Amino acid sequence: MIRSFTTLLLAFSCALVAQNRMTPELLWKLNKVSGLGISKDGKHVIYSVSTPNVEENKSSSKKYSIPVIGGTPVLVSNVDSLLKNEKISPDGKYLLVSKEVKLKNVTGADYYPDLSKSNVYVYDNLNYRHWDTYEDGKFDHVFIEGYGNNNGKPLPIDLMQDEPYDCPQKPFGGDEDFVWNPNGKEVVYCTKKKYGKDYTVSTNTDLYSYSIETKQTKNLTSTMLGYDINPSFNSNGDLAWLTMKRDGYEADKQDIMVTIGQSMLNLTAQRDDIYVESYKWSNDGNFIFFNAPINGTLQLFSVVYPGKSKVKPVMKQITKGDFDINGIIGQSGNTLIVSRTDMNHAAELYTVDLSTGSMKQLTHANDETYASLSMSRVERRFVTTTDNKKMLVWVIYPPNFDASKKYPTLLYCQGGPQSSLTQFYSFRWNFQLMAANGYIIVAPCRRGMPGFGTEWNEQVSKDHGGQAMADYLTAIDTLAKEKFVDKDRLGCVGASYGGYSVFMLAGMHNNRFKTFISHCGIYDLKSMYGTTDEVFFSNWEYGGPYWDTQNLAAQKTFNKFSPSSYVDKWNTPILIIQGAKDYRVPIEQGQQAFMAAQLRGIKSKFMLLPDQNHWVSTAQDALVWQREFYKWLDETLK
Image (tube, rainbow, N blue to C red; front, side, top):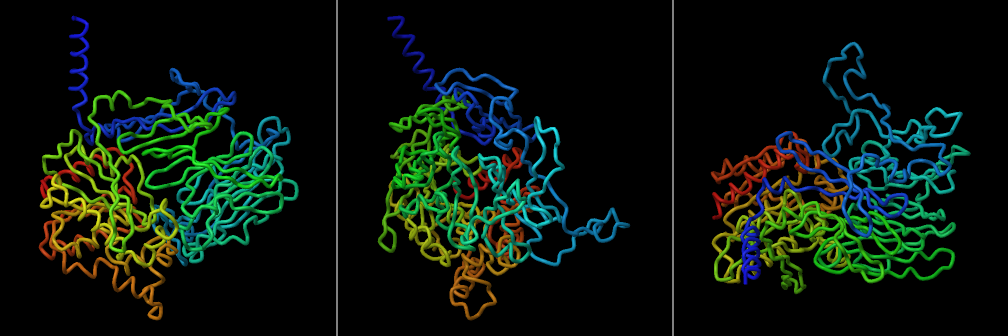
């Protein structure tokens, strides 16, 4: 009897503990887990855990080793000795490194050395700024340096000579942009060999092979016009990479291309709904593992590498479930190590049995925190759009949801525009946190999202304010029919293309919404075209420049789909958020929207983040963002 009472008391205590809800402060105490690789002996997973320090406004990181079969993590300091360094040549004599090279005069001091304290930039071409940085005349180049037992260590060899191009690619390229061939005789790297205006209107990135013996460079993808990135070899020297077909289209279908002898083969062209996010060779070189969005999640797939046997490149989906496989770490025997998230859980490492697809959680960096939280229920809904298509809508409910009550509800608008809405876990647009604050979230996989076929994905291009807006309204109108949704307390929030969507819907919602929040949203398409950093995006998505009066697609976009054209219909409170170092959606977009709202007498607020770009990356800025976000909702919706 005593034992039963103790058991009941423990269960009751656990239930009480689990009544806690996510808060902004708790969100920014979560550990961030990143897989680094499999140890040289194949028996351990090496990973890092980054922990935010709000007081110091930075993060600290520790590295651990854990057996592939599971066990107790061990803190390690000698990571370099545990993991294979892929940048060391196969014979151990050379090392690949990336260094900045000054090639162009840009600053006042460059032109006038006697004015060394001047703070001036002088440009005579485009691409004068990218993402969050002004160009300074420096370019990242790949170098070969002497290493190890190489007695006659050569002077560093710049594979790119005096070319004004970058490798790694800016702004997001990394070590994956350059790799040794296992034969040790060549290096393959990717870069976009275009400069100035030509650079900013093109996505034509190519793979180049540099021969150690001849010191000659060959373009391996000269006939391929879109993105060609992320080269890697299997142990037999077969090359794979990610490719897109069309120049100027950054959201084109991304496939895995491989070499077979002197020919090339697209391994994933067979499926119209597959947009590869990342990939990794199997240890034996006979398969390639990759992750791709499918039906509102990111799942793990494999595809056979035909090789000389010319077997068919059979594709197989390995995992299934309402979660995201958002990273592939490495393979140990019949086990693959991956990173996994869902809308209630930040990234942790999991093992995947390659025979069955079964998964087991390997790291537990946040278990203690999550054990104390009441979780949100995440539900799939399918609604019928205005053009009679079935659309997936994620619905996230508050913890301890009670269907007999009425809840304020937020329509979440995803960015991109061609960005998949899956089971991601964001430290800004965090559905768990929104739900914990008492909101139902309606998150539609509207037109323009991969994972539902190429036609669905491409329908948003040159139609930014068209069918996608109708999809949003269909989603919120359908859910608003539920008795537990308070139709008098609907809000609309989003960032990037989602922020554009908020501005657009503010002029066409017919009093559905009581509040709006737009972060880094495009407000005026003409000024956006004239100030954004990557013009290829505007040319493809808008149809061309606004001054081309003969271009019907462009004229339709600029005349019909600019939110600034509908500001006379704005009548609802709006919070506008903008990063000052955001050169993708520059600062004047938020400024113009706030100016219009203020002069029209609409309750509005402008949150400027002077040190942030298109994202919010520091803890204290992020916490101010969160607090203002929910403060605004409290003022205008609850």
